[in-house]
Length: 246
Image (cartoon, rainbow, N blue to C red; front, side):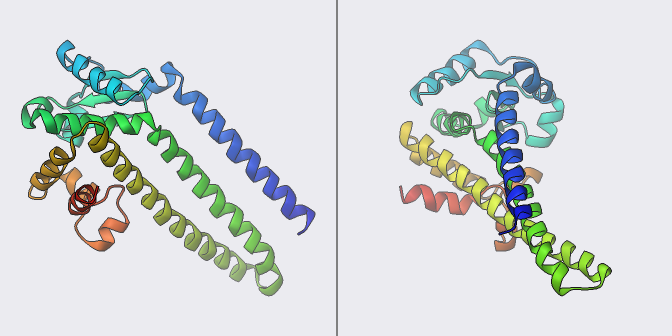
């Protein structure tokens, strides 16, 4: 291994470590997170709903401070009136129909699911996995490029080969990152159903969603195999099967 390769590896490690600790610090900064969270809504939910969510938060042993807000019109148009969203590991956004659309047991399962995302800092880990995926693709492309420079003489062909190598590696990394996202969803389903004894409520909710179609459902829960590989969420059917095996 040449000195150049060693220096490149050390620089990459420094960049990854800097990004990790820097982003972690930013995610704990209220002004920083609020700047982005305000785009989803700024109004707090009713006190009785706050008390319900905080009670479930205590059941799950979560000590992180969490702010609970109503979705604004923009968020509702994107996510739906009945939806619930954990955001930046410190916010919960609730659609106006969430507490009327679902049964109390289903509400517990769904609230628990989103709180588990916050408990394990899933949003932060998603940002980190994306950044690491990009840096790894760049690093591997450069390392392979050292070899390609020796075997490909024409500069134009070398450039094309660099692009093809990066494209291949970044796509493989992309599928691995998406698989990691889907695993986070399974983890949130599992912990919510087990800690809150809401397994059957989760199964019932997913079964009802099988026949419900919305833009976000099609995007996050595709039914084709290829669509599922490119999705951040497992299909509803896969999640039903997963919960039934617990």
